[in-house]
Amino acid sequence: MKTEKLTTEIARAAELLRGGGLVAVPTETVYGLACDGLNEAAVERIYEVKGRPPVKPLSLMVPGPEAMARCCADVPEAAYRLAERFWPGPLTLVLKAKPEIPAIVRAGGGTVGLRCPDHPLTLALLRETGLPFAAPSANPSGAPSPKTAQEVLAYFDGEIEAVLDGGACELGKESTLISLAETPFRVLRQGALPAEEIADALVDGMTLIGITGGSGSGKTTVLRLLERQGALVIDCDALYHELLETERSLLDELDAAFPGAVREGQLDRKRLAARVFSDPEALARLNAIAHRHVSDAVQARLRAHAMAGGKLAAVDAIELISSGLAGRCTRTLAVTAPRETRLKRIMARDGLSRAEAELRIDAQHDDSYFSERCSAVLHNDGSEAELTEQFDRWMKETGLWTN
Image 1 (cartoon, rainbow, N blue to C red):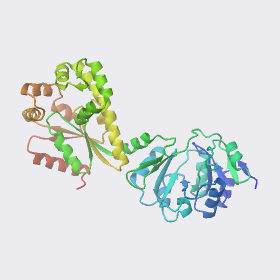
Image 2: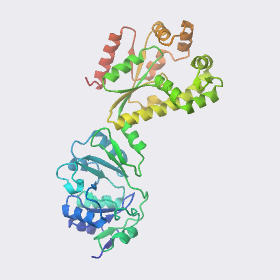
Image 3: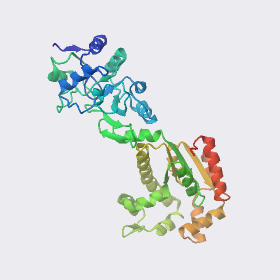
Image 4: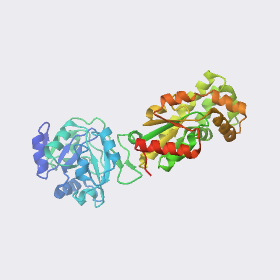
């Protein structure tokens, strides 16, 4: 067999593939060895030529997200979100396969991987044929993946019908493989696309509610109500205290910024509070340090929730607006309460004197600050039952109600 070297001859490459031939094709990662993914005999040849164990399934190259409905069943919303963000690109999505996908492609399993390559020649070829391509890397199993047409020919000259020369592959690293066939979602192979970017894209598709308001306003009650709706809830104040116990770098920064505030590896909270609540510049320094560490920790928790299939989350932060967290939220909700009610709650909750509680409230924004900057307001000036009724009404009005 003479292996043809093609450059712009898309029609010829399509003819060979429709006839059951093998054509090596370029992608942004490495060259793939392609065939008609619905032709069992052609797929068998790929296993033979590569020396690939039959227990290893093959992924399919497709021209775009529209192929999911053709090849896969029960496609989750997350798959379309990731395809919208990263296709064409180095991401393979593993989904439940439809019965028409040959068993040899699936290696007898119930899933199939889909990949939309970011290379104009291969995308043109996919559209020309109208076929999904079974297309593992164009190398013998165990050998380095080829990044040029010449490297493909060094492996398979005379054994495959053609190689479509699209120049050197830019990334030189295989695609990242993630399974969305069940929850939690799992990264099966770390490739050219970082797992954190995938998780961040899923977080961006989540409904994230930002809760804010002064101390003692009743934000924790609203968080509990959201938790009953299946939301991941993150109390930034509680998270900050947790980080003070677990993250040494945070304590080191606080010790450097406020000498004497950290004693024997522990933060002296009352000593620090007495220093910053009467000094706006010191409070701004403290907030800058805390916001950065808390923001990173919030994102880590949101990533984990998104990878578990979560679609709803809420974050409670008194500095939701100034910290920048509000800009990441789908909706923002202010919780307000009368000053005297807040004072009593803070004194009982934190063991503070009235003077200490007043100092804390006076260092915070007033209710109008939160109300004017949030998309909705809950006025917690009555009983918990009345607050719950307000919350339920808001959830129904926004379409977030699930119970």
